[in-house]
Length: 115
Length: 114
Image (tube, rainbow over all chains, first blue to last red; front, side):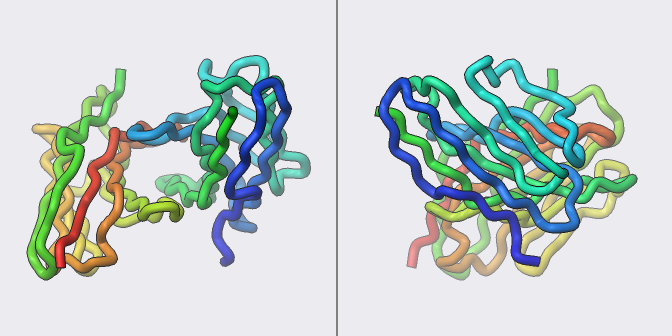
């Protein structure tokens, strides 16, 4: 068990550019989640996958955001035409869903700064 | 609406002393999980302790224990024998059973004084 990993850890970009983040979940986990965390706040749910199916998207996730999880393994989160308001920590988590439990394990996050 | 409230933005504790972090929540669900996560500076969020709402016994993990008061919708975290490595942001989270979206509080920053 190597834990949840995310890449890159930090990303600085200019307004209007596109960025893509990657998350590798714990290998046997079938659920994967994306959260956004701004300074002084707790994480806010963005979207989640069960295997390769994206089952819910928060209204926080505008049309500029897209997430994929091909083959039910790693996931990518892309932000198009970034805005300064997109600056935040983007957290990925995974879990092994089973009846009676769904504890999520978090990655270290990708800190995005939009200039 | 389901909410989690952490009313203490910051707490301090002397090394080796005990500190209690508060969390209250609101949900109409009868069965749910509650969690405390620790987020050290620039490091990932780590699960500290988990409580299942239908279990009356308070969860404990080494120096960490909770005081779960279901009727009062209160879920406080007690850290005994505080260590310098306990310094972090602590988040309380609610997960109604059968759902997948954690609802987090705003966090409490814990400082441990040597």
